[in-house]
Length: 294
Image 1 (cartoon, helix red, strand yellow):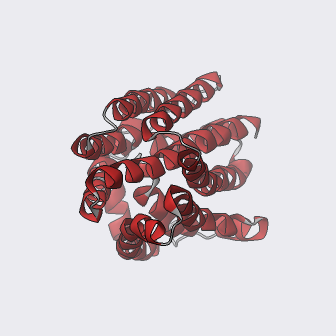
Image 2 (cartoon, rainbow, N blue to C red):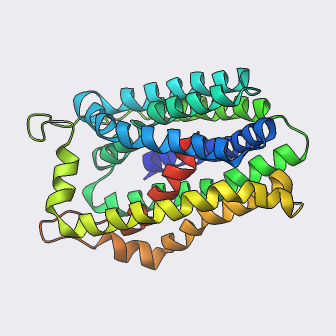
Image 3 (cartoon, helix red, strand yellow):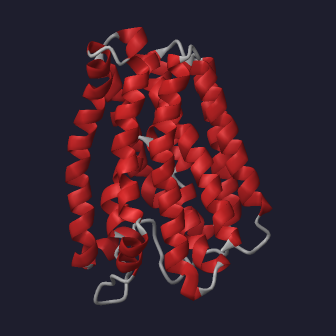
């Protein structure tokens, strides 16, 4: 489990940095334009890119060495974050770079999830998955709080973007330090970019939570666009917005109490697919709206 702890810490650092940078991005866009429409454009660009990149991202982990995929994803995200720091005064550039960031980060999660069974014994896989998911939820709680606090203390959005770039670099170093094979998938056994979509379409146990998550995403997106102007109206500023966003994402921690995690790890569909209910509806939902925005 020491290897998984290292991977979980890497995700904790990079996701916390990304969530902090998201607060800075919304503040930068709204501060320049004064328009919630621009904020919604940023969310739209990120979510659409995430959806479009999902199938190719999973295919990369099946086609190439997963450690390499994860490291390249992190390093590409470093470049995008630094580009955001250089264009922090231009809303249109931030929107475009946000979509680019979603694309560069997309391969990491499927490669990481697929690598876990390769680096831990089979009996430890449920516990390892729960640890990584819990660290992600902790990052979604701490990151926005940190981002709001930094802005409240006078840091500029560009400085937060630079810090975000550093967290991706830390993540890449931690992944590189794991000296075990991460494996690769089999494109012969599961051919095509849409193999995962075909599995979901066939299995009702997977289809229901995925559709529920998609519907919930609409509501979360509406709330996310409205939260920053509301915080300004209430006098909370970026700090208040960070707290609102952090509590939204950090609520996923409740789903990772030991007893609940163990129970959900044992839920399986009729054909043996593990049904990650908390991840599909909770962590993945907020990840698409917040983490993928950075």
